[in-house]
Structure formats: C-alpha cells, structure tokens
Length: 279
Image (cartoon, rainbow, N blue to C red; front, side):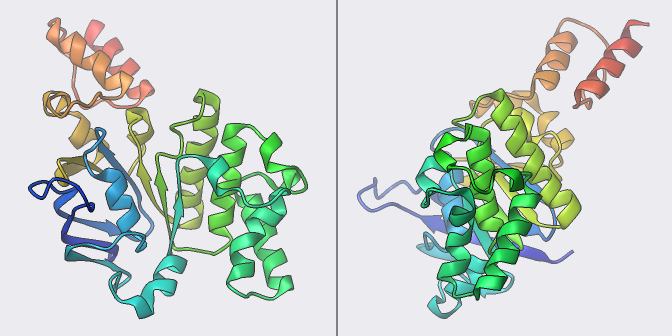
C-alpha cells in the first residue's frame, strides 16, 4: 500500500538549543494510508516535534517530509497538506474557539470558505462520527475532558482530512476519558479509513495499532507490529519506557520461571496463555 506520509532522514533543531543536539536526528519512517499508527517515546525523544512536522507546523532543517507526495517545504502546497493531515493536540481547552459545540466544529470549514449548506452537512457528519451530535447545542466548557477532546476531533474531521495526527490527546484525561477518545479514533480508522497517527506515552493505547514506532534521541529505534515491538521488553525498558500491563505480567512470570509465550498482548490472550501454562 502506498504511504500517505514519508519522513526521509529529517533533522530539526529548535533555535537556542545546543548546536550539537537535535530534536530530530535523522528520523525516517513511512505511514501507509488507512493505518492506525502509534509513535512512542520518553519525554524529549522527539515524538511531539515529529508530530508538528507532519502537516507543516514545523519544517525540517535537513531531509524532507512528503504528504501524499507533497513536500511540506513547498509553501504553495501548504494549504492542501493541512487539508490532508489534521492535528489534535493535548489540551482540548486550547482548541475551543466558540461558546457552542456546533459553532466550534464549524470554525475550520467557515475559514476555508465553504458555503453554509456544506458547513451544516460537515458539522453534523463530524459530530455523529464522534458520537457528540446530541451535544451540538451545548457549551464546550461544560463537557467532560473526553467529550471536549471528541469535539476537537470533530473539528478536524469537518475538514475531511485523510489523516489525523493526535499529539498526546489523552494525557490530561481520566481513564474514562481516555477510553472514549481511543475508541473514537480506532473507529474512525477501522470503519471510515482515516489514517490515524497517535503520539502517546500510554503503552496500553498501542495494543490495537497496525504499526508501532519507538523514538529515542530524535530517531526511530524500533518499529513493527505491537507484538513485535513489545516482545522486546528489555530494549523498551532501556529506553526508559514501560510496556502494556499484560506484557509486563507475562515478562515477570517468565522471569519467575513459568513457561509462557511472550507474544500474548491483549488481556484475553494473556489470560489464555497463563491458563495454558498452568495446566
């Protein structure tokens, strides 16, 4: 399948940072259309900096990023790139611009100059996709954290992007809010074919991904399916990362001498593996 995003040997250093260090240090990866991709890494690994490169908020010092074949450094392509790749950030309150949910979702299409009837269609469609249509006349500031983040996602969906990048969207949410948001983005990918790129430090959110990339010191140090990446617990711990709870349990049981496959990942797979090992 053709990549919708290609990151090619990208270097980037923030102004004022140590000249000998880079936030991105030769980052290379491809993301295929319609996939659910998770990018993991400790604080300072470069994952949020990479996220801001994927729709041209930041531009590389060296190397290039292609979005559906368009170079993010080409100013004439920037609007089309941002229509292709939408961004959702960590704090939903910082993305709210209106006092009514449907007006907030309409903000981007209005600024893109769509006619009122088209905006109405897009707003209703987006709110239904994130299960927030019944809240369309509510004030965003009276919603829960998970509901606010779903409204923020709807605001991006209203632009009908082919790809959505979410930079730590659940970092400020409680477990219920995190569950709402992750369920929403997985559904957008699986049922509607939108490419999802999730930047997170919650390892459990990566279990159902199609592809996982692990970043450290501004570059990709590991990639593969969740089972491939999480099976190497020692390497992840060496990068200062945890692993999903199910993987940690199996890791500890293996250390204790229980003969159990380390490939189990979901709760159901882990329970089955333990039950089989104990028979």
